[in-house]
Image (tube, rainbow, N blue to C red):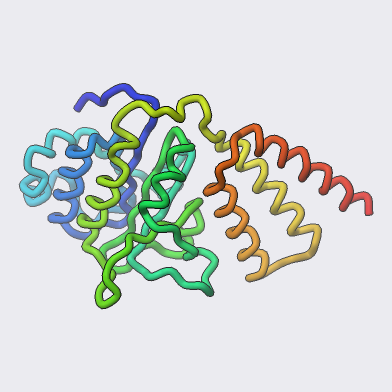
Length: 241
């Protein structure tokens, strides 16, 4: 399948998929919504399975674009923004599960040239170690009696919401956030937390909270460069004292 040349890149990452029917539907959805990349991490079913191809329907033309990654790190490498999704209702007591709703996330995604959208296993979702690799946590709102969506259904909802943003050009061209700058800011935050001798759960809370604030803010790369300069001055003052 030949991709349409465009300024943005959307990568779908599915970790540990277990069912051939779900995989077939997801391949079809990737074709429906013109997803640039589909990466499978530790899949329990093969894309060549007859059932996968049957449920992919005409989407089987996309199968040649599916990549099996050795690890989640390989699947998300080089992406400006990594967002994890989960059926688990957000918890106020868990720093990894401070979620934003999918529709609000679309506005956040506008600032980034590339997005890796990560989904977990049908049975257990994503592990905490996998969640730690993501910048943001997304929850798809559903009824309280049964908020858990089937994996392929959740993928469909997310791709639908993101379709207008990723299918063509954007008026945000030229004002994207540089992931490298965000990484440098977070490194300085981590250094400050260490120098202030904050550790354990409290340190995790602080780091994830600041990461969430940075990735969802309306600031520009220039704003973050100013913040980086300011934090370097703070670090110097702390070290001198």
